[in-house]
Length: 88
Image (cartoon, rainbow, N blue to C red; front, side, top):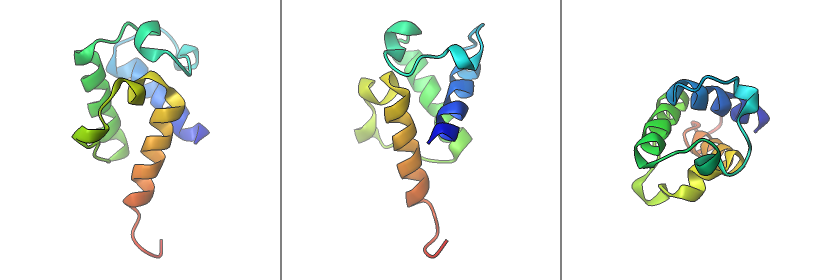
């Protein structure tokens, strides 16, 4: 999951056009630490979907999903495992 978190940090910096290194992205309170609004949040999740080639269902969209790197990384990991072919 650490590799996914590292990738997510880079995605956050790119998607939000932040002028900071990915290592400075906090693990928690992302919405307040980065000043995320609903538009930024959706844009970020689209980047996540495209990067990992997953789909985030409407039912899963929530502040909790984008407010914590651990929660988002666990969600991505779960979606990736669901996309694995049987026997892979």
